[in-house]
Image (cartoon, rainbow, N blue to C red):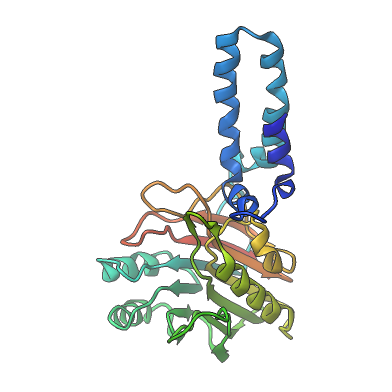
Length: 296
């Protein structure tokens, strides 16, 4: 019963201490692993009642996440834009290989985070042939097959952050289907540490600032690409998920690349429909790249 309630209503867990509610929401899909563990205990106890009761959390998990196990809609579905989002990692040992992999994906828009002054010329050179238009603000950048206009920073800096910290941008992409406001953002990292627990204060503050910028956007069509350092279920991303439609087909875990356990890299839209979303093979980054097809 407890597992079923926590799966169905994670909001009952408060964030008052250690942001336990957000931590639970971030790894919510993995709550289903409690079912086979409880099944083993039920078998050891030879309890028929315990076995039957497992149908409840199993049904809740299936209702929440079962559809994500179904085959994807397919990359051939009708769409207007293919977008790609990737945190390339500031300590990536192979930016050239990463840039080539991204260029070969054939996306119309490529959003990158954790760009460094040393690696930036590499991405510019490799991506330029297929994506001749680009803009960079701080450590985030956008490359486009279509012309860009009105490119500018988006201030998502938490109040307590000092120094050179620019991790948000906004640009108008002039597509054949009309102008689209494209945002690229890299929200602050979260940490799990004692005695604070799941420390997400900066991330939540940055998400609120980004949500306000999106709400003030004058163009109808919006595409938001970024590393948000959290799963969509996390209440800390409510300023974004309440205003935009996430692409969430399948599980699409994107981090860490060696053994992904959470999708923290996202594609969201307004007045546009995500058709399908998938992850690309690993690069030199600790994140997997996420690609999506969008119908305007």
